[in-house]
Length: 533
Ligand code: G4P
Image (cartoon, rainbow, N blue to C red):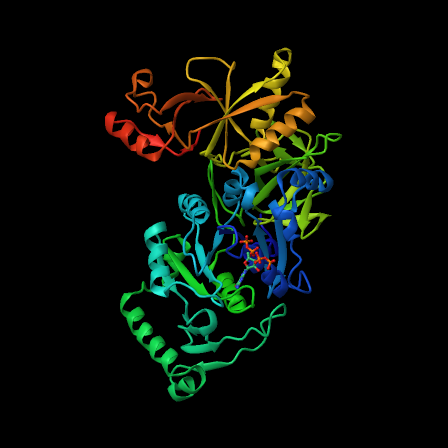
């Protein structure tokens, strides 16, 4: 039974991920959030920017030294009574399946868009995964201190590209050199832009009610005032009504404008976000929905991070607590492993350090030492219970390579290594449709994973490999393979039939046109981008 305290702790939790295309300002925004929470004193120290941009070989070194990557973990901080968990979704080169899986552990997402670019490729990909889960999405259009695209065009872009309705909570007045501030639609006032607060908390900004038109004209000028009034009129007629239920169902995204770098509009965004976003919600399991408050402790593993250190082949399993309170002194049941045990060295990752924790609540993420027993998607609960959370889907890899060991005598180590690394979820492996494991095709979401594979096979399994890149970019599982004659599918010339490790047939294509063509040629064929089994 949940005590009052557990209920309170869970109600004040907000667990979210920030999705964006590289360089849109995710790191800068996170820094500002942490600044408000007092987790750091001066913005600018979440992670060494240099770290994120290092070349591949350096990245490996960094991983080795630290044992675990800070760039792909979670930050927890307090702000005005809320306990906030930000899940980092690694971008740049370290974009991988983990980036997608992290979204499985979030209750909502903040989408950062560069105002001069609109929706970009990586945002689109990450958004798809959020859309699949129907989690609320909050949009922050950043870099208004630089010349931005037309505001209506930006909103249109989000609606068309992502298929979600938008509702601007505030409205920008100009951009770049002409940026004057934002209009707060709820409070009907203009908040004047100032960049003097850089690196500090937002402080008190000057506000002018829109009714005081003369004062407004005197401050931001006639041209900006006229344009604002005109745009507001258009907006009243065109924009979607604000509806919290729609927001929480992931059908409508509230949109905010600001500049993370100059710290404008960030705190307003954070406040609204915390109010509109939900605390942890029930999650689906095989025995029905699990209520975060009413049920005792339960969690699922969403990420496993292998240590790059050859000397210790340890791994850290990240789990998201879905219900109740976790007490480090108590035993838990690892359902898939069929064992009751005490979790080893439970920890939370805070900025640049790890701290051992004694308790945590639904919404929190903990990392535990994994001696090789956990798999992605595994459920943990109290010893009294036994149930499984819905599995984490396998996401479509976007890069493929044929992999062979150089020394044929090392066949066994090679297969073992590749299979173990695939089990951790770092890569996906496929084999020829009719053949065995003579030839392995490796698929990854981010190209860096190829280097990780090569490095780990050499260092941990003592196997040198040769990789030949394959041109495929699109992968589709055959959802109704029992009903179609897979052997005789009429595909395109670039199509390749393979099987995943579970034996499920799937198709690889060089271009998206071929996907459509194959569907057209084979009536009744159902293809999916995710594998749920
Ligand atoms: P990311 O994590 O999404 O990849 O983006 P990040 O915050 O690292 O920001 C990318 C670049 O954009 C950085 O500049 C950052 O200073 C800048 N930036 C972020 N928010 C704003 C904003 O509101 N306005 C303006 N004008 N710039 C912004 P950089 O030169 O690449 O890095 P740095 O050397 O300044 O750290």
